[in-house]
Length: 423
Image (cartoon, rainbow, N blue to C red; front, side, top):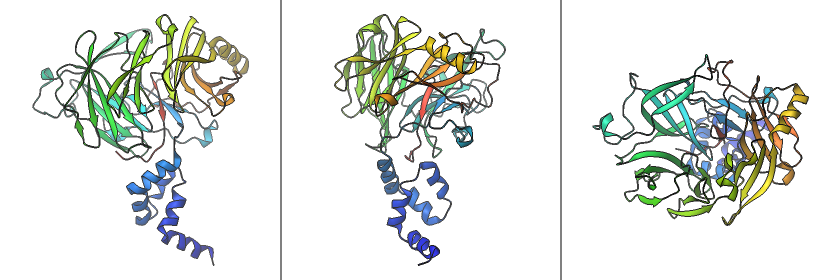
């Protein structure tokens, strides 16, 4: 049998073709949609997408998207995590297809991004389109905090206030370039935060948790389900610590988690639609949180307690019983090592943890650290032996001024995971 006839047999056998294609990464499959109408139909089918997602299982991020601080560009700083050879890097995802200015990422969740776009009052494209009732005026609608402080290009020590008159919110898949613009009912109270819950191994649909503040210590949750395309008519009212950080959610184990500087915080079970207490490390009362995130189904909290240069990496037990110190990070040791490697000059206090990656073994766990200096640098620090690996593929936004140095923190860093998940 000739090679051409074998290829023809495979192409005509959709089951066999599907078994081959399901093993390929999403970006390759998107390119292969152009091969033929048959391949387009197969790769686009819900059955194939579900099979592909299950075949890949829990996927580690290939990079980190760093917010551009509401610059008038759909581009972001990008830190690749899987390659160190610049020639092997693919272009980072940009969100130009949203057709919106001043895009900011609010959350990343298993391949989907929750984003906002801020419009100036005099912007001719600004309209209150994201509300269900288009008869409402700006005075009728209670918007989120619409004042944003950004450093100016000429002097990073000075600040300029820009008044944003309106926001739109999107959930998008940067791999497939699909997105959905969120619509909101009229809420009686101010929106404090929007949180995204999405687990493609459980369901192809996502949920949005909208947190509103009723008074000093009383909050209300409104839930949106993309399957029914509706907001839950029965909001959840609850009390919470004054210092709970609803704007920094972490989705892990079918729940949205928030940290607090008090002894107890909360997490929200998206399936049971109920709130549960989550303990905080005792040191959270007097320590500084440097990172809050998850990796491989484990929750992590990085704190500086005795010194801003000495960080403890806590991990939460699966039963929510206690946080335990699992690793230590010495920022001054990282700075000293970099100085010896490449004459890097920086104040060690101007550093931040962007991500904790839990390896399958202790020797594979890493911390991704952003070092601020004359040349901003991103490194991976092995949490077992302290060895460093520089990320040479750090890609700044093309609109960013080279003289402008922004100190990125974990609240700016969002995992980028390739997925075919539909919107």
